[in-house]
Each structure stands twice: as C-alpha cells, then as structure tokens.
Length: 224
Image (cartoon, rainbow, N blue to C red):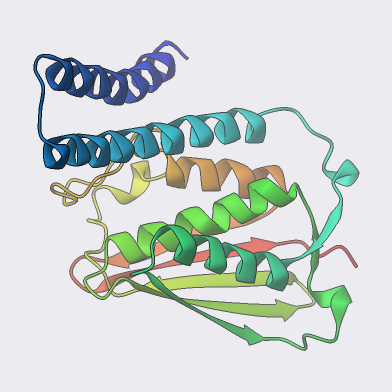
C-alpha cells in the first residue's frame, strides 16, 4: 500500500510540477502570441496526461472495492465495445480499431454481462489504446465470440510485444515493459483492466512475442 501511494503520488506530482514550471517561465517576461500558443499546447498535453492518471487511479480504487457481483446491472458487451472504439477514435484519431462479432447479434442472451458500465468500457478503452500506442500501424483487431462457457474477447495488435521476462509482472500497478523506450505511459492501464475483469468473475491472459505483437484474451460470464 505504501509503495502504491508513493507511485501514485509520483505520477500526479510530475505533471503538476511541469505545469507550474511552464506557467512560471511564461510569466517571467512578455512573449509573442506564438510563444503563448506553444506554451498553452504544452500545458494542455500535461493536463490531459494528469486527467488520464487521476481517472485511472479513481477507476482502480473503484474496481478494488468490495462489490456484490449480482447487484451489477446487465449490459450488452458488443455495444460497450463499439462505444469504447468511438471513444478511442475521438481522443486519438490516428488509432484504428476494428471490431468483429463471431456471434449472433440478435441473440441478446449470449451478449449480456453484469458489470459497471464505465468500468467495463474503461477496460476495453485501455486495451485498445495500449495496442494502438505500441504498434507501428496504430491498429488493434477486436473479436467477440460467445459460447456456453461465456463471452470471449480477443484484442490483437502487431506491435513491439512484451518480453517474456516482463509478462509475470505486467498486471502489477505502475509496471512498464523494459522495451517501451520513450513511449509515454504510467503503467496503470493493464493493472486496472485486470482488477475490473476479475471483479466481474472473468479472466484475462496475454500472449506476446517481441517485435511480432500481442494478443489479450478476456473471458466473461454471461448474464443469461
């Protein structure tokens, strides 16, 4: 818990410090309109990063709470996937997410799960964004399959992959792969996804080959 608080404080403190420095430098003397525009663009980027971190920390706390699974409302997973895709595209227009349904969309009983709508959609958004961010083509393929055992969702990218030595730690909060280089991130996303899926009685697994790509598989019990 102490380590988590220390890491969370670090992730919040850094963008705040960067914002204050930029404001102080901008106020030291009068500058051109172009300089102020550049400063505002940089400030917007830092504030957006801070918003992302705080939202994910709040969702992580919510997903970690003790909640009765049976009390969750019922949602159609295909609709949440389409909404997640739209959200990713609205914030990152260069990201491409394709969604394929290997299921009868008219059979609602095979598509419904119990869960918190925002947490479920947040989990999907996180996986989609991660796959696109770490892929040269900025693309993720999503496939939804329904069976008697429940719902299975796969997210496949052709990105940098995850080294085998990192896989045992990939769901730990604030852990980042050793091969991510300068790609921006905070290591909260996958730990958040893991907690959300587990809280709904589901399961999640990762298969990854460095320089080839990654497949994340999620299974969820259906609310028939």
